[in-house]
Length: 337
Image (cartoon, rainbow, N blue to C red):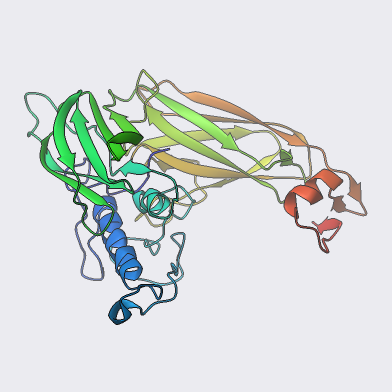
């Protein structure tokens, strides 16, 4: 899954960067926020307490105050409805900084191309020429546009940022290859998406399925994809939903849009977003459709499994208890409704 954030970079429609308001602290796009996070992590790593250079042996650990975006406190009062400094957004979809940390903290060779490869193209579009960044823990990175090499970078900034300036966008593929000792050990390829064609739905439920206990939650990711099934990372349009069956619609939220929760509609952000449905005490099949004029709609079914009830308490089955508490210890045998 590629990263999700409303503001991709300075060159991405529909916003073309983030415009700071009077009560905003930061002016980050998803790309620039990831670069800033990498720099801060590298500052810790260079000054970790195990550094043999005593002048830089200062810090014993590194921790993020917020892993996910939330409304815990401000920072972006003019433009957001949540603090947006998490590694994942408020519905737990990963952002570019999430994948950057995956690379930096991976003890195996790894890399990640920041952003996408679907910029405007055509006779009426302004030519996109930008610096492309690859986050890698390898010795070197080589970048290719449509199989043509743009050169090799063996001098990363802040330990992990391999920058390739003045890359001209051309529809097709952007591929990064990481090497150690001249051997390819990690690679990633991005493909230019075509026009929006259809909606794709993917459900996420617990290990024992969706339980009709009145409190279980199913997540549904919805994406706008092209005719080949590739997500369109510049899509920011509204999607409308219908629901039938024994479920309670809880919806999702849009970054920067007040009162966007609990509605039967939501916008994508970089082509994806997430909604949720809560179970009731009735089992059966829940059907959800997603539609937008001009696109092929999508439909998904989620089965709410029956749960044994004792005095209006939902009894957890032994296998579910084990899934929820794999390390043993005291666990309640019932859940209050």
